[in-house]
Structure formats: structure tokens, C-alpha cells
Length: 336
Image (tube, rainbow, N blue to C red; front, side, top):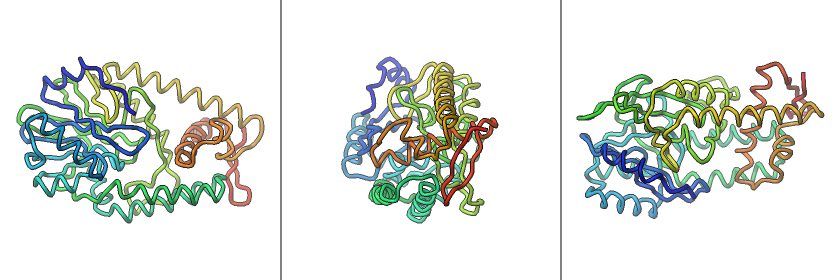
């Protein structure tokens, strides 16, 4: 479960009219932080997964602040993951709230079922090309299909452009696209107060895993995205921002974003170095490397660990320290 938030940070955010509503999820990450912005229009940032338990908890949290679902006037989406989008359409239908999301995410949300199926097919092919055993691939496909019901399609009524201002009566948020953890990660910066609504772009107690996913553009060339490299570039951009606090999608607020980002950079450098040592011993595929790094992980974590390995190997390939080749349809990495 996510850690309890720092009370002082939460109190300061609440004093500025931003209230954290911790909504339960069925996932290992624990509760998701939705944020009620007590301004005009009355706004909810993210919505939790599509479940009766989550909806009941969200309604109770709104009641604690003297609000109802029907009072919402705006819903803002930080990214496409199911623990953040599941209840969006239900809430919008009940309240009539406008739904705001990155412009490039809008078609994905409206075609949720088809896009998730395409992403699963892409993931299956990627796993097989990187040495994941067929039984693990099929088991993970079944798990992923069962998880889809926690998400839902949503109709975006206000698409947002990168760099655009999202205005309220008493604040303005600058919209920044920061892909990596997902292709659609979007952060919202109050340039006057320094507050950042960060979604899962940066989380205090766990690293935001850059999962390899199909690009948002359904017509893009079918090549494997370099998710970790994109994420590190996004972190570099965020590091340069002047921030007072990052209100994250899970866990505690972050008051030293530069220190945390530097810690993440060091972690990724250590992992890349360890993988380079393993590859230098002998050529291995990504699944073998994941086994060396983390042992026999749960089936539900297989794609996560594969994404981690491929992300760091991408860095090694870009640096010229590792090359890749194919044997019997499986990609192997060897030291250059």
C-alpha cells in the first residue's frame, strides 16, 4: 500500500484549496491519489479505477469536503493507466463535468477497448521476441485481459495541448507532456505557487516504471518505443522547473523534486552498469537478464521487469557499449 502522506504538506496543499482523496485500487501500488481542487470550476484530478469500492470511497471523500459527484465541473486526466481513468466517464455522466486530457490521448480514451487489445498484442510479440516463455506470455495475457475492466473508455471534451494554460478563477496550470512512465504522462504546473500536479511522473517511495507501450498515434510506425530514454529526458525537463511541491498520483507529496530526480538518475545508472556486467559475461536475451537481476518474479511482474531491462539496454546500445542480434526470432545482447 502507499505510504501515508506527510500531514504538513497535505495541510499546505489543502490551505490552497487542493484536497487529496485517496481512493483504493486492487493493484500492488495501493491507493491512488485523486485531487479535489476547490476553485471555479470545481475540479477533480484523476478518478480511480472502475469499481464500486473505489466509487464509494471517492463519494465518501467528496462528502467529507461538502461536495458530491454531481457538483464536479471539470475532470482532469494525468495519464492513461487504468487506476487513473476507470471512473472518468461515470463521474462525467453524473455531473456533466468537462473532461480534460492531453489532445493526443483523447482518441486513445475513446477507443479504450481496441487500444488495450492492440497494446496486449504488441506486448505479447515483444515478450516472445525477447525470450519470455510461451506459458508466461499466455498467462500474462490472461491477467491483462482481466484487468481491462478496471479501466473504461472516456470522452474528452477539452483536449489540451502541450504548453497550454488551463485556467481557473484563482489559478492557472501550465500543461506539460512528460512521456515515459506512459506515453501520455501529463503534468500541471501552477507557475505562481510552484505546485505541480504530477500524476505518476514522479513518486516519492517507488520509481515510476517506464512501461513499454504502443505510441498514442495509432498510425505510428510499429517500432519498439524507448520508454526509459523518453522518461529520463522528461525527468531532466522537470528537474529544471522551480517547484514548491509535487502532488503525486501515489504516496506523499514531494518537496525536493531535484534531489529525488537525482536519486532516480543514480539508480538507473547502477542498473545499466549491472546489466552491462552481465552482458559482458556472455550474450543474453532480455528475459535471461531479468532472471539474473530479479530471479523468478511473479507472472504479473514479467512485463514490468522486461520493460526495465530493455529500457536500460537501450541506454547501453545508444552509448555503443552493447549491440543486439537475432537468433531464431529472439533478440540477444552482447558487449560491443
